[in-house]
Length: 386
Image 1 (tube, rainbow, N blue to C red):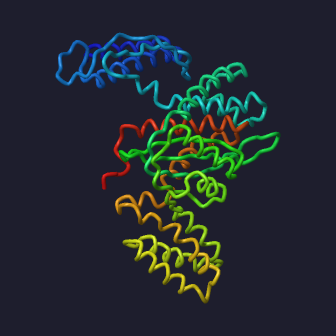
Image 2: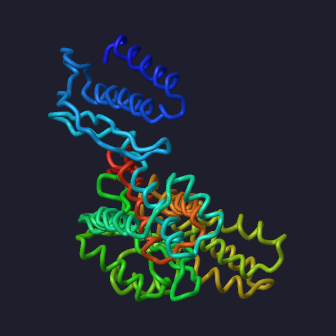
Image 3: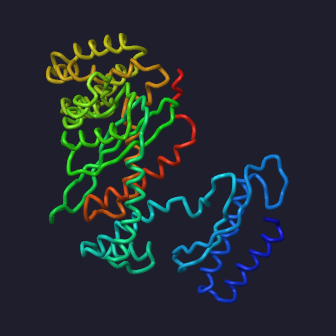
Protein backbone atom coordinates (compact mmCIF):
# COMPACT_ATOMS: atom_id res chain seq x y z
CA UNK A 1 0.00 0.00 0.00
CA UNK A 2 1.47 3.39 -0.99
CA UNK A 3 1.79 6.37 1.33
CA UNK A 4 -0.72 8.23 -0.86
CA UNK A 5 -3.25 5.42 -0.47
CA UNK A 6 -2.60 5.38 3.29
CA UNK A 7 -3.14 9.13 3.44
CA UNK A 8 -6.33 8.98 1.39
CA UNK A 9 -7.71 6.18 3.58
CA UNK A 10 -6.98 8.10 6.77
CA UNK A 11 -8.66 11.20 5.33
CA UNK A 12 -11.67 9.02 4.56
CA UNK A 13 -11.78 7.90 8.20
CA UNK A 14 -11.67 11.48 9.46
CA UNK A 15 -14.40 12.54 7.04
CA UNK A 16 -16.65 9.70 8.22
CA UNK A 17 -16.27 10.70 11.86
CA UNK A 18 -16.63 14.43 11.18
CA UNK A 19 -19.70 13.98 9.00
CA UNK A 20 -21.57 11.29 10.94
CA UNK A 21 -20.16 11.57 14.47
CA UNK A 22 -20.55 8.45 16.63
CA UNK A 23 -22.74 6.82 13.98
CA UNK A 24 -19.80 6.88 11.61
CA UNK A 25 -17.50 4.96 13.97
CA UNK A 26 -18.43 1.56 12.53
CA UNK A 27 -17.46 2.56 8.99
CA UNK A 28 -14.35 4.29 10.30
CA UNK A 29 -13.35 1.16 12.19
CA UNK A 30 -13.86 -0.96 9.07
CA UNK A 31 -11.64 1.38 7.06
CA UNK A 32 -8.86 1.28 9.65
CA UNK A 33 -9.09 -2.50 9.93
CA UNK A 34 -8.90 -2.86 6.14
CA UNK A 35 -5.72 -0.76 6.14
CA UNK A 36 -4.15 -2.82 8.93
CA UNK A 37 -4.98 -6.12 7.22
CA UNK A 38 -3.52 -5.03 3.89
CA UNK A 39 -0.34 -3.87 5.61
CA UNK A 40 -0.05 -7.18 7.45
CA UNK A 41 -0.48 -9.10 4.20
CA UNK A 42 2.39 -7.13 2.67
CA UNK A 43 4.59 -8.04 5.64
CA UNK A 44 3.72 -11.72 5.28
CA UNK A 45 4.35 -11.67 1.52
CA UNK A 46 7.57 -9.70 1.91
CA UNK A 47 6.55 -7.25 -0.79
CA UNK A 48 3.93 -4.60 -1.57
CA UNK A 49 1.38 -4.96 -4.34
CA UNK A 50 3.02 -5.23 -7.78
CA UNK A 51 6.46 -4.86 -6.19
CA UNK A 52 9.28 -7.04 -7.49
CA UNK A 53 11.35 -8.38 -4.62
CA UNK A 54 13.65 -11.33 -3.97
CA UNK A 55 12.14 -11.55 -0.48
CA UNK A 56 8.62 -12.18 -1.84
CA UNK A 57 7.09 -15.34 -0.33
CA UNK A 58 3.77 -15.42 -2.17
CA UNK A 59 1.23 -13.27 -4.02
CA UNK A 60 -1.87 -11.24 -3.18
CA UNK A 61 -5.07 -12.92 -4.31
CA UNK A 62 -7.83 -10.36 -3.90
CA UNK A 63 -10.21 -9.92 -0.98
CA UNK A 64 -13.12 -11.72 0.65
CA UNK A 65 -15.94 -9.88 2.42
CA UNK A 66 -16.59 -10.72 6.07
CA UNK A 67 -19.12 -9.22 8.48
CA UNK A 68 -17.99 -8.95 12.10
CA UNK A 69 -19.71 -7.69 15.26
CA UNK A 70 -18.08 -4.79 17.10
CA UNK A 71 -19.18 -2.50 19.90
CA UNK A 72 -19.84 0.10 17.21
CA UNK A 73 -22.17 -2.33 15.44
CA UNK A 74 -21.82 -4.84 12.64
CA UNK A 75 -19.23 -3.91 10.00
CA UNK A 76 -18.20 -5.53 6.75
CA UNK A 77 -14.48 -5.69 6.08
CA UNK A 78 -12.41 -6.88 3.13
CA UNK A 79 -10.19 -9.74 4.25
CA UNK A 80 -6.99 -9.95 2.13
CA UNK A 81 -6.39 -13.32 0.45
CA UNK A 82 -3.03 -14.80 -0.57
CA UNK A 83 -1.69 -17.43 -2.95
CA UNK A 84 1.42 -19.52 -2.24
CA UNK A 85 1.55 -18.75 1.49
CA UNK A 86 -0.89 -19.25 4.37
CA UNK A 87 -2.27 -16.01 5.82
CA UNK A 88 -5.15 -14.84 7.99
CA UNK A 89 -5.14 -11.35 9.60
CA UNK A 90 -4.14 -11.49 13.25
CA UNK A 91 -6.63 -8.71 14.01
CA UNK A 92 -9.44 -11.15 13.18
CA UNK A 93 -7.82 -14.34 14.44
CA UNK A 94 -6.16 -13.38 17.73
CA UNK A 95 -8.40 -14.00 20.71
CA UNK A 96 -11.51 -14.88 18.70
CA UNK A 97 -12.06 -18.29 20.29
CA UNK A 98 -11.47 -17.32 23.90
CA UNK A 99 -13.45 -14.07 23.65
CA UNK A 100 -16.37 -15.91 22.06
CA UNK A 101 -16.17 -18.60 24.72
CA UNK A 102 -16.16 -16.06 27.55
CA UNK A 103 -19.14 -14.27 26.07
CA UNK A 104 -20.89 -17.60 25.74
CA UNK A 105 -20.18 -18.61 29.34
CA UNK A 106 -21.67 -15.36 30.57
CA UNK A 107 -24.56 -15.63 28.13
CA UNK A 108 -25.42 -19.10 29.41
CA UNK A 109 -25.69 -17.78 32.95
CA UNK A 110 -27.86 -14.93 31.72
CA UNK A 111 -30.19 -17.17 29.71
CA UNK A 112 -30.46 -19.87 32.40
CA UNK A 113 -31.41 -17.34 35.05
CA UNK A 114 -28.40 -17.81 37.31
CA UNK A 115 -26.69 -14.51 36.54
CA UNK A 116 -26.32 -11.60 38.89
CA UNK A 117 -26.63 -7.90 38.11
CA UNK A 118 -22.85 -7.80 37.82
CA UNK A 119 -22.81 -10.66 35.31
CA UNK A 120 -25.55 -9.03 33.25
CA UNK A 121 -23.63 -5.76 33.20
CA UNK A 122 -20.44 -7.48 32.07
CA UNK A 123 -22.38 -9.38 29.40
CA UNK A 124 -23.87 -6.20 27.97
CA UNK A 125 -20.50 -4.50 27.93
CA UNK A 126 -18.79 -7.42 26.21
CA UNK A 127 -21.52 -8.43 23.75
CA UNK A 128 -23.16 -5.07 23.23
CA UNK A 129 -26.56 -6.78 22.82
CA UNK A 130 -29.00 -9.15 24.45
CA UNK A 131 -28.44 -12.83 23.72
CA UNK A 132 -31.24 -15.33 23.20
CA UNK A 133 -31.13 -19.03 24.02
CA UNK A 134 -31.30 -19.83 20.29
CA UNK A 135 -28.23 -17.67 19.59
CA UNK A 136 -26.39 -19.28 22.48
CA UNK A 137 -27.14 -22.78 21.19
CA UNK A 138 -26.02 -21.93 17.67
CA UNK A 139 -22.75 -20.33 18.78
CA UNK A 140 -22.12 -23.15 21.27
CA UNK A 141 -22.47 -25.83 18.62
CA UNK A 142 -20.06 -24.07 16.27
CA UNK A 143 -17.49 -23.33 18.95
CA UNK A 144 -17.69 -26.76 20.56
CA UNK A 145 -17.04 -28.41 17.22
CA UNK A 146 -13.83 -26.42 16.75
CA UNK A 147 -12.60 -27.01 20.28
CA UNK A 148 -13.43 -30.71 20.24
CA UNK A 149 -11.35 -31.04 17.07
CA UNK A 150 -8.42 -29.46 18.93
CA UNK A 151 -8.88 -31.63 22.03
CA UNK A 152 -9.05 -34.82 19.96
CA UNK A 153 -6.23 -34.09 17.51
CA UNK A 154 -3.43 -36.71 17.14
CA UNK A 155 -0.65 -36.41 19.73
CA UNK A 156 2.39 -38.41 18.60
CA UNK A 157 5.69 -38.89 20.43
CA UNK A 158 6.13 -37.11 23.76
CA UNK A 159 9.41 -37.21 25.69
CA UNK A 160 8.37 -35.55 28.97
CA UNK A 161 4.82 -35.39 30.36
CA UNK A 162 3.59 -32.79 32.89
CA UNK A 163 0.22 -33.30 34.62
CA UNK A 164 -1.78 -31.11 36.98
CA UNK A 165 -5.30 -29.94 37.85
CA UNK A 166 -7.08 -26.78 38.96
CA UNK A 167 -10.67 -26.14 40.04
CA UNK A 168 -13.55 -24.01 38.74
CA UNK A 169 -16.91 -23.35 40.37
CA UNK A 170 -19.78 -24.86 38.37
CA UNK A 171 -23.45 -25.61 38.94
CA UNK A 172 -24.26 -29.31 39.09
CA UNK A 173 -27.73 -30.69 39.80
CA UNK A 174 -28.85 -27.55 41.57
CA UNK A 175 -25.73 -27.07 43.72
CA UNK A 176 -22.40 -25.31 43.28
CA UNK A 177 -19.39 -27.64 43.16
CA UNK A 178 -15.68 -27.34 42.43
CA UNK A 179 -15.04 -29.15 39.16
CA UNK A 180 -11.54 -30.39 38.41
CA UNK A 181 -9.90 -29.17 35.22
CA UNK A 182 -7.29 -31.80 34.28
CA UNK A 183 -4.58 -30.77 31.84
CA UNK A 184 -1.37 -32.10 30.33
CA UNK A 185 1.71 -30.55 28.72
CA UNK A 186 4.15 -32.53 26.64
CA UNK A 187 7.75 -31.77 25.81
CA UNK A 188 8.24 -33.12 22.30
CA UNK A 189 11.42 -34.74 20.92
CA UNK A 190 12.34 -31.43 19.26
CA UNK A 191 12.14 -29.59 22.60
CA UNK A 192 8.89 -27.77 21.80
CA UNK A 193 6.06 -27.59 24.31
CA UNK A 194 2.55 -28.69 23.42
CA UNK A 195 -0.68 -28.58 25.41
CA UNK A 196 -1.78 -32.15 24.86
CA UNK A 197 -5.28 -32.04 26.30
CA UNK A 198 -7.74 -30.80 28.89
CA UNK A 199 -10.79 -32.29 30.61
CA UNK A 200 -13.39 -30.99 33.06
CA UNK A 201 -14.62 -33.54 35.60
CA UNK A 202 -16.32 -33.61 38.98
CA UNK A 203 -13.14 -34.58 40.86
CA UNK A 204 -9.55 -35.82 40.65
CA UNK A 205 -10.63 -39.37 41.42
CA UNK A 206 -8.69 -42.18 39.76
CA UNK A 207 -11.52 -42.90 37.33
CA UNK A 208 -11.35 -39.37 35.92
CA UNK A 209 -7.56 -39.20 35.70
CA UNK A 210 -7.45 -42.65 34.12
CA UNK A 211 -10.04 -41.67 31.52
CA UNK A 212 -8.09 -38.50 30.69
CA UNK A 213 -4.74 -40.31 30.37
CA UNK A 214 -6.31 -43.10 28.33
CA UNK A 215 -7.63 -40.49 25.91
CA UNK A 216 -4.05 -39.24 25.35
CA UNK A 217 -2.90 -42.78 24.61
CA UNK A 218 -5.79 -43.37 22.21
CA UNK A 219 -4.80 -40.21 20.36
CA UNK A 220 -1.37 -41.70 19.73
CA UNK A 221 0.77 -40.45 22.61
CA UNK A 222 3.86 -42.66 22.91
CA UNK A 223 7.52 -42.52 23.82
CA UNK A 224 7.00 -40.97 27.27
CA UNK A 225 10.13 -41.46 29.37
CA UNK A 226 9.59 -39.05 32.27
CA UNK A 227 6.50 -37.75 34.10
CA UNK A 228 6.12 -34.78 36.47
CA UNK A 229 3.06 -34.33 38.68
CA UNK A 230 1.78 -33.79 42.19
CA UNK A 231 1.11 -36.80 44.43
CA UNK A 232 -2.68 -36.71 44.31
CA UNK A 233 -3.95 -40.24 45.11
CA UNK A 234 -6.23 -40.42 42.08
CA UNK A 235 -3.50 -39.29 39.71
CA UNK A 236 -0.94 -41.60 41.31
CA UNK A 237 -3.20 -44.64 40.88
CA UNK A 238 -4.05 -43.81 37.27
CA UNK A 239 -0.43 -43.08 36.40
CA UNK A 240 0.84 -46.31 37.93
CA UNK A 241 -1.83 -48.30 36.09
CA UNK A 242 -1.16 -46.80 32.66
CA UNK A 243 2.51 -45.82 32.78
CA UNK A 244 4.08 -48.40 35.05
CA UNK A 245 7.87 -48.34 34.86
CA UNK A 246 8.15 -44.77 33.54
CA UNK A 247 10.24 -42.59 35.91
CA UNK A 248 8.07 -40.22 37.93
CA UNK A 249 9.14 -36.91 39.41
CA UNK A 250 7.07 -35.62 42.30
CA UNK A 251 6.70 -31.85 42.04
CA UNK A 252 9.25 -30.32 44.41
CA UNK A 253 7.14 -27.20 44.97
CA UNK A 254 4.10 -29.17 46.10
CA UNK A 255 6.24 -31.52 48.19
CA UNK A 256 7.79 -28.57 50.05
CA UNK A 257 4.28 -27.27 50.80
CA UNK A 258 3.23 -30.71 52.04
CA UNK A 259 6.24 -30.82 54.37
CA UNK A 260 5.04 -27.69 56.19
CA UNK A 261 2.12 -29.70 57.63
CA UNK A 262 4.71 -31.35 59.90
CA UNK A 263 6.17 -28.01 61.07
CA UNK A 264 3.57 -26.35 63.35
CA UNK A 265 5.65 -23.31 64.29
CA UNK A 266 5.70 -20.65 61.58
CA UNK A 267 9.18 -19.50 62.63
CA UNK A 268 10.59 -22.96 61.89
CA UNK A 269 9.10 -23.33 58.42
CA UNK A 270 11.60 -21.02 56.77
CA UNK A 271 14.49 -23.10 58.09
CA UNK A 272 12.93 -26.39 56.92
CA UNK A 273 12.24 -24.86 53.52
CA UNK A 274 15.87 -23.78 53.16
CA UNK A 275 17.08 -27.24 54.14
CA UNK A 276 14.86 -28.81 51.47
CA UNK A 277 16.20 -26.41 48.84
CA UNK A 278 19.76 -27.49 49.60
CA UNK A 279 18.67 -31.06 48.87
CA UNK A 280 16.89 -30.12 45.65
CA UNK A 281 19.78 -27.94 44.45
CA UNK A 282 22.48 -30.59 44.90
CA UNK A 283 24.86 -31.16 42.01
CA UNK A 284 23.90 -34.82 41.56
CA UNK A 285 21.77 -37.58 43.06
CA UNK A 286 24.47 -38.88 45.41
CA UNK A 287 24.94 -35.42 46.89
CA UNK A 288 21.16 -34.97 47.21
CA UNK A 289 20.84 -38.28 49.05
CA UNK A 290 23.66 -37.30 51.40
CA UNK A 291 22.04 -33.93 52.21
CA UNK A 292 18.65 -35.58 52.70
CA UNK A 293 20.15 -38.06 55.16
CA UNK A 294 21.70 -35.19 57.13
CA UNK A 295 18.38 -33.35 57.19
CA UNK A 296 16.49 -36.42 58.41
CA UNK A 297 19.00 -37.01 61.23
CA UNK A 298 18.85 -33.33 62.16
CA UNK A 299 15.10 -33.54 62.79
CA UNK A 300 14.87 -37.12 64.03
CA UNK A 301 14.80 -36.27 67.73
CA UNK A 302 12.91 -32.96 67.81
CA UNK A 303 10.47 -33.69 64.96
CA UNK A 304 10.27 -37.48 64.49
CA UNK A 305 7.13 -37.34 62.32
CA UNK A 306 8.74 -34.81 59.98
CA UNK A 307 11.92 -36.90 59.78
CA UNK A 308 9.96 -40.04 58.93
CA UNK A 309 7.91 -38.19 56.31
CA UNK A 310 11.01 -36.68 54.68
CA UNK A 311 12.76 -40.03 54.55
CA UNK A 312 9.82 -41.66 52.82
CA UNK A 313 8.66 -38.87 50.47
CA UNK A 314 11.59 -36.69 49.41
CA UNK A 315 13.29 -39.40 47.27
CA UNK A 316 10.24 -39.22 44.96
CA UNK A 317 11.21 -35.62 44.24
CA UNK A 318 14.79 -36.50 43.28
CA UNK A 319 14.04 -38.49 40.11
CA UNK A 320 14.90 -35.34 38.13
CA UNK A 321 18.60 -36.15 38.56
CA UNK A 322 18.30 -38.79 35.80
CA UNK A 323 17.82 -35.94 33.31
CA UNK A 324 20.58 -33.84 31.71
CA UNK A 325 21.54 -31.00 34.01
CA UNK A 326 20.17 -28.22 31.70
CA UNK A 327 16.70 -29.84 31.85
CA UNK A 328 16.42 -30.19 35.60
CA UNK A 329 15.29 -26.73 36.69
CA UNK A 330 12.29 -26.73 34.37
CA UNK A 331 11.40 -30.37 34.81
CA UNK A 332 11.52 -30.73 38.61
CA UNK A 333 8.14 -29.05 39.24
CA UNK A 334 4.79 -28.56 37.54
CA UNK A 335 5.37 -24.79 37.55
CA UNK A 336 5.15 -24.61 33.76
CA UNK A 337 1.59 -25.89 33.97
CA UNK A 338 0.85 -23.77 37.03
CA UNK A 339 1.60 -20.66 34.95
CA UNK A 340 -1.02 -21.78 32.45
CA UNK A 341 -3.46 -22.22 35.31
CA UNK A 342 -2.84 -18.64 36.42
CA UNK A 343 -3.68 -17.45 32.92
CA UNK A 344 -6.85 -19.56 32.98
CA UNK A 345 -7.79 -18.08 36.36
CA UNK A 346 -7.20 -14.55 35.06
CA UNK A 347 -9.71 -15.16 32.28
CA UNK A 348 -12.29 -17.30 34.10
CA UNK A 349 -12.64 -15.16 37.22
CA UNK A 350 -14.81 -12.76 35.18
CA UNK A 351 -17.43 -15.47 34.85
CA UNK A 352 -17.12 -16.40 38.58
CA UNK A 353 -19.54 -19.32 38.27
CA UNK A 354 -20.14 -21.60 35.29
CA UNK A 355 -23.62 -23.03 34.68
CA UNK A 356 -22.21 -26.51 33.91
CA UNK A 357 -19.00 -28.44 33.24
CA UNK A 358 -19.35 -28.04 29.47
CA UNK A 359 -19.29 -24.26 29.80
CA UNK A 360 -16.13 -24.35 31.92
CA UNK A 361 -14.46 -26.80 29.52
CA UNK A 362 -15.37 -24.58 26.57
CA UNK A 363 -13.64 -21.50 27.95
CA UNK A 364 -10.58 -23.33 29.30
CA UNK A 365 -10.16 -25.17 25.99
CA UNK A 366 -10.34 -21.92 24.04
CA UNK A 367 -7.69 -20.30 26.23
CA UNK A 368 -5.33 -23.28 26.06
CA UNK A 369 -5.87 -23.72 22.31
CA UNK A 370 -4.71 -20.14 21.72
CA UNK A 371 -1.67 -20.56 23.95
CA UNK A 372 -0.76 -23.85 22.27
CA UNK A 373 -0.92 -22.23 18.84
CA UNK A 374 1.34 -19.41 20.07
CA UNK A 375 3.87 -22.03 21.20
CA UNK A 376 4.00 -23.73 17.82
CA UNK A 377 6.89 -22.51 15.72
CA UNK A 378 8.41 -20.60 18.63
CA UNK A 379 11.70 -21.23 20.39
CA UNK A 380 12.33 -24.67 21.79
CA UNK A 381 11.55 -25.00 25.50
CA UNK A 382 14.44 -27.45 26.02
CA UNK A 383 17.44 -28.45 23.95
CA UNK A 384 16.78 -32.16 23.71
CA UNK A 385 20.12 -33.05 22.12
CA UNK A 386 21.84 -32.10 25.37
